[in-house]
Image (cartoon, rainbow, N blue to C red; front, top):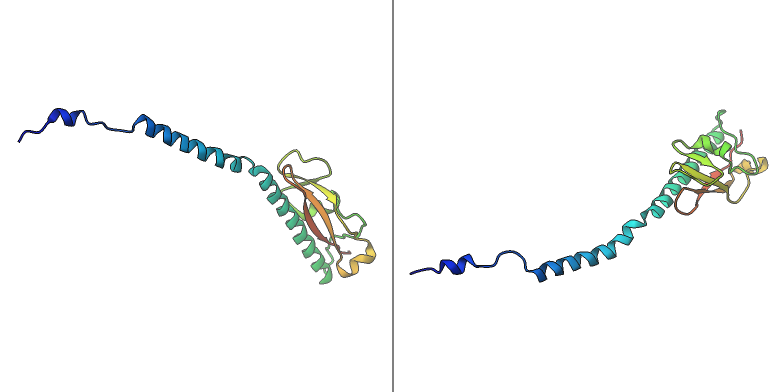
Length: 150
């Protein structure tokens, strides 16, 4: 039996032009639908970072108030009407800078007043007030601050 060697040599190998175009179109559609989701992650990251700073402030002022209740003498006093100031709250967080203006870097967070006051009369029961924390990207997040007297 003779085999047709010339028929086997002319056998087509690889992809056709139509198959390559279909693959490119499918990749283009996937890229067009997935790309917008990955492009705008800076806002979500900014919200998460500001929420982390707000949580750190809330936690550290709660520990500060607990120390005051336990009778410790080295408590930071939070007994002013507007406790949401950089001078009072900056010692409660590390690694970030609390400012009053617009944040220019990822480590700066704008601190503004929320609701409530920490007047000396209201600190008897550990009054909770709110402050707003906003990073370079994203929306302002709320930090619950616990008042403490010295």
